[in-house]
Length: 240
Image (cartoon, rainbow, N blue to C red; front, side, top):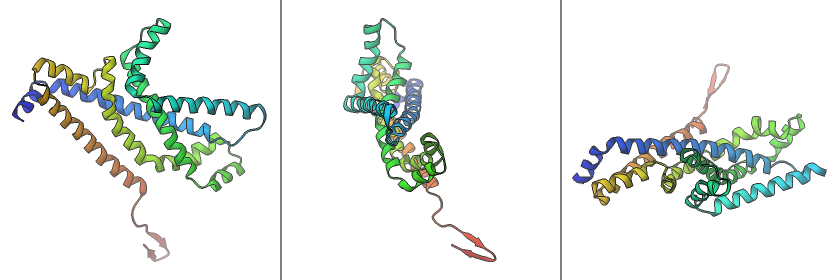
């Protein structure tokens, strides 16, 4: 343990930089992934259309289902390698590791979140859709002002879980050279010639991050649920 502490002290700045990189990509990727999930789920829940609109909608839904199938059915590491090295190979255009890493996490998270959001939308009473449509709202307006806020509240635990997963899974981005915590650990272990103690430090950092973030997310969930008791004021009487 003393060796692990010494390795941490000697390389604290590198560990900090890697941790910050991991948090940045995890936070941005989860937020953009959630936005992608909201858009995809909103499109997939559009009521059946007639005529050419219906045909276009079916084609779009088929393409979105294919996107979900591919990105949920293949490892993020494989996706990262294919995109980072595939674009230069196919089109002769160089790729930036930071942009590629951001895109991979966002698109991968979006594929998972789209099904989570769709489940959250389906779980809302259909009467709210009918009431919104009856009042003259379009599907987009209904999703933004009526269904969306409720769906986000319903899927908050799943979103938080996806965020925690991303903190750990972004370690696969080291294969394309993204300098997150795991890649930094590989560099430090190579220079210190002490793989075991170096990775103990990294394990503790990951555990600390996921534990603290899980606690914060649970606290936020309770806030969204509201107080356990409500007070209604009626004249001079109070009901709890």
